[in-house]
Amino acid sequence: MIKPLKIGKYEVKYPLIQGGMGVRISGGSLAGHVAKCGGVGLVAAAGIALNSGFYKGDNYVQADLDGFKAELEKAYGIAPDGVIGVNVMVALSDYELLVEAAIEGGAKVIVCGAGLPLTLPGITAHAPDVALVPIVSSARAAHLIAKKWEKGYGRLPDAVVVEDPDTAGGHLGEKLENIGTGEYDQYATVREVKEFFRAEYGRDIPVIAAGGIWDRADLLQALAEGADGVQMASRFVPTVECDASPEFKQAYLDCCREDIGLIMSPAGLPGRAILRNQESIVLYDEMNATGCTTACLKKCSYRESGERFCIVKALDRAQRGDVETGLVFCGSNAWKADRLTSVREIFDELFGSMAAEEAA
Ligand SMILES: Cc1cc2nc3c(=O)[nH]c(=O)nc-3n(C[C@H](O)[C@H](O)[C@H](O)COP(=O)(O)O)c2cc1C
Image (cartoon, rainbow, N blue to C red; front, side, top):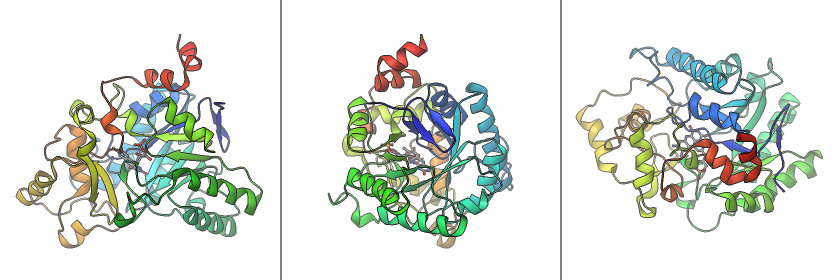
């Protein structure tokens, strides 16, 4: 029942993509170890400059590009033959430059969400072997992308991630008022997207379910419901290999179901996070107000009107260990984390003896 996953020219033994987690939660270590275990490991681009060692306070874009490539190199150091890719949010100001840096850094797969990557095949035309994977939350968004890519570039996605706004972590591709209403059906959307590509183009495009997938039962359900694979993010946070600080991982271990909720991000999108410290996040920016120094997002109400707080710095503080004034993004199931584990243990649990035997 569990089959390998083929994305474009690349195949992984296990149908699992480790979701990109910005601001260095999924850097080279996590991505490399996931790839080494037989999944697709993703280095996330968002805010990677800040804690990179390349950032000097006034060179955000260059530090982003240098930091991104350095993490890809680190990942390949761990898994030289692994399928290592990137996650680049379309909402980032330097989105196109980051896509180019990913190609230069040897990314095999480019996953793009937080906006529709309508021009991605154009930006990557010189690297046709790199697999292109949009993240959508609706079949309508998949239609729009497919039509634009096919007409403009003669290309279709190599896979599509369907991300459930009711459960996924980080920025979400749905209006705040539509989240948690009970209307959204994750697997109906997966099947709709799958069927669209079959009916419209006669193609069997892998469709990956993301959001709320935690254990083997969730994985098997996703596959039984028609997904070709899963994208999992929160489950990989409390692992020794995850690039976040011990305090960030501990916040997952300490949180309970009621702590997890939605915030409105200055990026104009809702986001799911641990909500224990909302006032301290805003207070920090009020007390240390330096204004926007990164211009990291194309659209940002903090940069434009000083509204609320700087999201990239709040996420970065948490990544570095200040979970009191930092923002901890997480999926709805993060409360299930009860101990620090390892990437290998997660693969063993998900894929049973198959993964365990290979590790031996
Ligand atoms: C800490 C954190 C950071 C995230 N950052 C990003 C990101 O930078 N770009 C993105 O497209 N998705 C991001 N996500 C979403 C994940 O890649 C993934 O699709 C989603 O969280 C899946 O749900 P799960 O966490 O329940 O497994 C993030 C999620 C978390 C938990």
